[in-house]
Image (cartoon, rainbow, N blue to C red; front, side, top):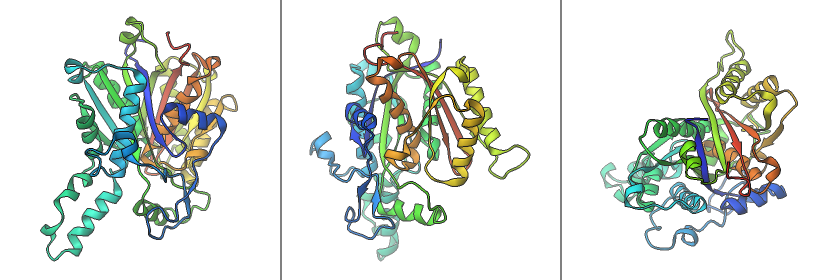
Length: 374
């Protein structure tokens, strides 16, 4: 299909594993990333467990040099980009670096860095006495910028703060950039960190949701290129992104039921991809225990697909990854394909709902590494 995106590699940092191989093995083995986080930050937390990477040491992945100033969000993102580039085998030179960029989604950057910077402006004798080295990490596009600096990506650099649908929005925006010739290679995905600040924020925001999944954290980046160009060069594909849709459902319960609104977006994405609901073998949902949002997503998926496709609920093993939720859903689908030739050519759908009413849909066709030349 002309104009579609090819995924030629991907990298992930998550509670169940760092790197595509480790992440994929944990998924197929059904391993959970839930860990005791009671002593992770040396301060009280609202819940004793989370899907956190409690033993993550950025120096193991990036070395000691220049890593001391990286906050958790940025460290995850820079690591995931490096893993994705290595996984794809893409060779960057001076010319290609100018056409290689990144579009990174998140909720609001590093909430911990923002909160600590703001606190400094309040507790000092004068606001301008705040430590200036704290400021760069408080900027929302810090992670994307540091990824570009670290890996020498001189092309497009963008940050999309779209909550749980951030990765879908990044894919959609990135696809537009590639089709219009603004880049040749783009790293697309999202990142979210776990911190005491986020734990307390989410606890107070959703105190009435007893079934809510424990919080999680992750970064997942896909190396994307024009699918036609990749095939013409005889290179393998992990997946082809056939369609992406983003929009909103009516959370107020107006004339159109919210589930009907999401179902319309799913059908529109399938039409754009040129596939029918019956051709879809897996639907990866973003359900995380937020009853109102999950009910919309479940009802919409049921309305479009019935009981046909397999359901993949990433939050069961990865927790609520916030702004990185759709990114880890995509990584989970890619992981299922990677070592299973029986899935070659199968179509999967990723759905995502944000409590603010945002919805995202991705339709993709995946291949194993052995069947990737398509």
